Image 1 (tube, one colour):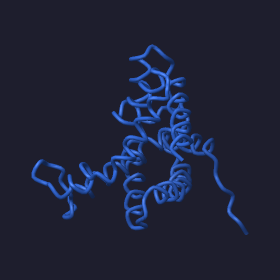
Image 2 (tube, helix red, strand yellow):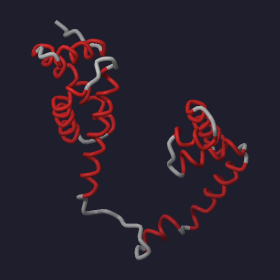
Image 3 (cartoon, rainbow, N blue to C red):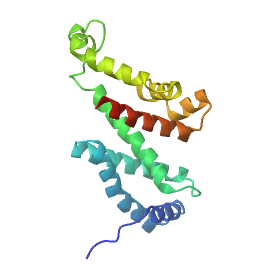
Image 4 (tube, one colour):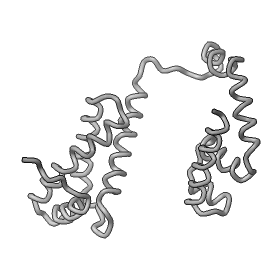
Length: 183
């Protein structure tokens, strides 16, 4: 007999009931979200143990902060925010303790020679620059700010006086156009 899969609407209902002290709803909620969290996290990490660790951290965070959940809002985005924070926190700690960290300081000439000043990559850089020149000024600026400089779509939208959704669409279409030009 197959188990019925829960929906995010049920998660919202269970979260609200759990806030009011319903232990069965609390158990249903945690049992339903645990496999979901594991599956989402494992897609972004190749380490099963790390996914399990992050899942446990997410469940602990849900337990500790369930009182802060706003019943007027859907549960799933709230859960996703916790998942993203816990995954980022885990990765930050993981990379901070790695012993094979490569530095990119001025003293690391081997790294620069292999990755920065390697003349074999010069042709690729020129192709990318030429493709970027074929874009309109606005498309080039949006792409440069989001994809190269790391600005958020909201920041770019504020800078350029555009809607955030229009900025996202422009960045996506520009990426597709550049990919086609560089094939």
